[in-house]
Amino acid sequence: MHEPNSPSRQRIRIAVSLFFFCQGLAFSSWASRIPTIKDKLELSEAQLGTLLLMMPVAQLLTMPFSGKLVTTYGSAKVMRIVAIIYALILCSIGFANNAYQLGAVLFSFGIVGNMCNIAVNTQGVAVEKIYEKSIMSSFHGAWSIAGFTGALIGLLTMNIGIDTLTHFIIIFVLILLNTLINYKYLIPGKSDNQEKRSMFTKPESTLVQLGIIGFFSMATEGAMFDWSGVYFKDIVGAPENLIIVGYASFMVMMAIGRFVGDYIISRIGRKRTLQISGILMFLGMMLSVLFPQFWLCTLAFMLVGIGVACNIPTVYSLAGQNKNIPSGVALAMVSSVSYLGFLLGPPLIGYIAEISSLRYSYGVFAFFGLLMFIMTSKLKIFRETKDNSV
Image 1 (spheres, one colour):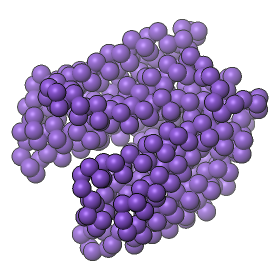
Image 2 (cartoon, helix red, strand yellow):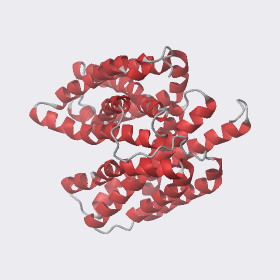
Image 3 (spheres, one colour):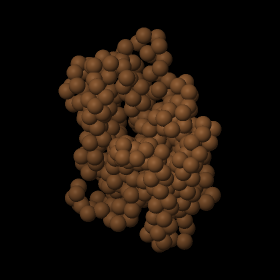
Image 4 (tube, one colour):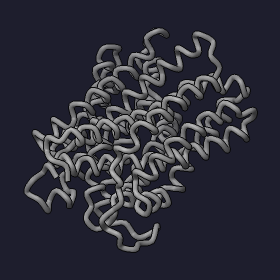
């Protein structure tokens, strides 16, 4: 156990934050080059859409295995290996010469990305135990900052004529350096609960409920990531050069929300934070539906960004504190349900928009916030304790 004011405790937190940052940097670097890769391989929108499904499908299929891997070998050992493999696979995307090669690489990218996700969040849970307070939101804030950084690096490399492969090699070097410098500060991460359990054991009801709350939040995130630009263009009628404002306002407020989230949780507790987040999601989405004017929609998307900011960090933190199941396995269970929201949310928006309108589909998604509020109010883990900061 580290002393409260021990420098090593702060150093561990910095190291884990940098691993969160590097994971986000790898993913955002790939995302920044999607248009370039689409043009290079001459892919249609339908082909690209199918290929983009390879990553989430791979992640869902390997969730149980990733949890078991982290539990068996420890999150630190897994993290320092898969972080480098993840960056290597990123580089291999630059070698893809056709859709089949790209699909295979993206499937592998999804598998290893999921291992990184479970390992790094297990590290976050372990650091929270040292600090004995909520700090998970700041780790996810580092991931969000990496999203901005990766996009800026991608924009810079494209504008100065650096090809995709060279761009990805630069990112690989950065991730390799981080791993070599910071892996020794990771917490071993082996679970104290070494009870033998099947990878496909029936999950506890509390974990399922946490997963559903995560589903509502990630479905909303997915809707904002993939459809905010279209909403600003088709529904708000924003000028071409201002279409990005909706997405940017959402992302900025989500990042800010994650960095202040731990302070908020320490003041009002996890239960009230999740409840308020659900209400903000509902209000933001409904405001954009009822008043689709530029400035009001910008404000609305900011509310949604704040609303989703702390949900996944909080849900993961609660799952990792489960006393009956090892942290890695519990996180994998909750992630499996939560990530379905990110996978199914954007297509669902499209289907609803097809039979009605995009504006109506956002109205439907607004009620995910209310459902999240109701579920949080009834969540067993909060009913069993007087301290809602749990």
